[in-house]
Amino acid sequence: MKTTPSLRAIAAAVCVLAMPLSVQAQASLPASAAAVSQPSAAAAVKRYELQTNIVDGKMVFIDAKGQVNPVLAAKVGDTVELVLKSGEGAEHDLLIPELNVASSKFSANSGSTTVRFKVTRAGTFTYYCSIPGHRQIGMEGKLEVTGTSLAETAAPKAASESSQAAALALYTPAPSPMRGPDPSAVNVAANPAQVPAAIGARAPQTLKYRMETVELPGKLDDGTTFTYWTFNRQVPGPMLRAKVGDTVELTLFNAKDSKMIHSIDLHAVTGGHGGGQHTQVAPGQEKTVTFKALNPGLFVYHCATPLVPQHIAAGMYGMILVEPEGGLSKVDREYYVMQGEMYTGRPHGAPVHQEANLEKMANELPDYYVFNGEVGALSKTHKLQAKVGETVRIYFGVGGPNKISSFHIIGEIFDKVYSEGSISSPKHDVQTTLVAPGGATIVELKVQHPGSYLLVDHALSRAGKGAVGVLEVTGDPVPGVYHAGAVQ
Image 1: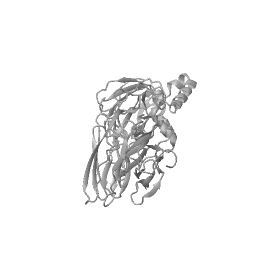
Image 2: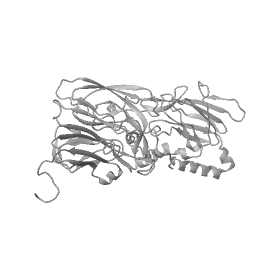
Image 3: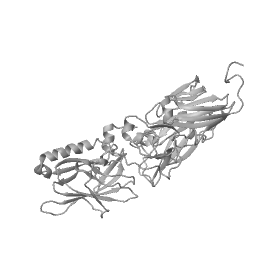
Image 4: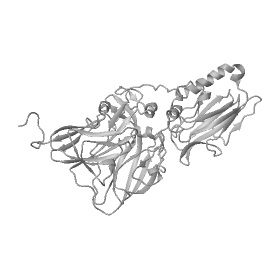
């Protein structure tokens, strides 16, 4: 899995939209077989056709001759015309910040776009896609301009100041436009009770799963919405269940209206970057991987498309349980809970549609901590239920992308804890258990007294940012376990 890119790289990829543009976007023009120079005594029109695609696992620009991230050439005074098309269907753009050039965004749905600009400066300039993660995974090339810079001839000092301003703009975060909550937002919180049935003792089988990646507006908090990226329209994605020795065929489909490429990396998989290497799926397409469940345990899965932490923070994580030979011990109730953190442009609780803030993400400064994707997911939208005397098993994981959880239930003690998702050697009588980002645990407890028990991350400031759930226990109390007041 790729590491989180530096703040400098993120800022370069996402923040140049704040700079003034001197670009005229036009409708798509007829295709050209190659770059063509129009005859002129002093200057020419240099026309290039660039199409985006995936080559050797990287997102790139390709010219009409098939060159990957080609070096474009022009002379001072030339007009450069770029015809841009999304070859794999995802949303892209093209920027040359030092020349104040930026195209409109384009995708399979929007069709091609054309950008024209006059070159007034000599030098080598970088063009790239500013969609988060795309430059980091390969979408950048060079524009080489020869001749004498017009600005240097007329006013060398002004040209130097302009260059400094352009360089500074690369590292200056752009303000996000503020808009109200999205009225079409839906609840994305996964129902914690939707746990697949236990498998138990049986011979190995071939299991087939199909999952869809969907980008949609969701309810983050009361009066606050967010554009989630999801597996199957929920956070976390659906819990998968297999048995050690099973063969799993997994198909990932990316919704046609998606703007991003998505993928899946399952920590239960040996090889192929957990599946992420071969499931980079463009909008409207699907890919399949097949793997054997070699090790029993509870494993996280997540999107593995750059920027990986951005995809995870937007909701793209879930878990797969691989049961051991003979299965797990029988319990009365099973629940599925995952913690994640979210990085937003506006403060916690702002009555707006929140946008992701990648600078906060790089600095690991979350505005929200959530169970199952949203504030109130396990206290208002759903609650865990049990009756006195029942044994409850919770499959708990941390999507992250960055923070460790100190999982605790206020008023209860875990009778068993399968640390780090390993089923082979449970611990007993545990108060709080650490769960790493991208990690999991299984806890079991027998409830003996009625009441509302709070699921928390015991880094308790996070409760105020959303990380609170409720286990509602009903029934008659077990005598002698607990009562208010003195000894009776």
